[in-house]
Length: 220
Image (cartoon, rainbow, N blue to C red; front, side, top):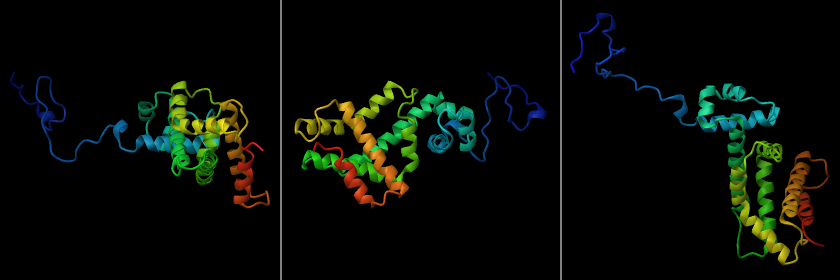
């Protein structure tokens, strides 16, 4: 098929006529679609973290997140089809970061008690350096919008610690109680330690708070 005659009003070639080949032009390449701009996903997650911890998850609409992040709502929904998906993605990313901090200095050659204590100290150090992320995790503790698929991935990240707790039960280091009980105790002890360190009102040094707090976990 041959191209039709040129319309003088369209000599720029920007609006090709039906049946004609698109003319290649030189100059700047076309800007990438907003959805594919590098860094947009991370920008949305970072903005969501700040807004969620300031205003609450339920009180922060996706429209505000996209506006504060400097992206369109279409871009936000490209990455996160709904708010619960966004919350779940942020929750999972922070949990993975935390799991890495907890396990980074783990030494399988050490006794069970020392390995658990070392892991909890890793959590405390990470939490002291990332107060906003700790606050968000606290907000999400019973958040109904985080799906089972996300929770299973989080469990996989911390399954090694669950194995250590089971070993501690077998070795008589902690009471022979359900794993969920011990997981809850670990969560509340470490959260309490972080809160006391942050408040600075206990009259104890950070090391004293950590040592005495962790001692509460073990069977006496």
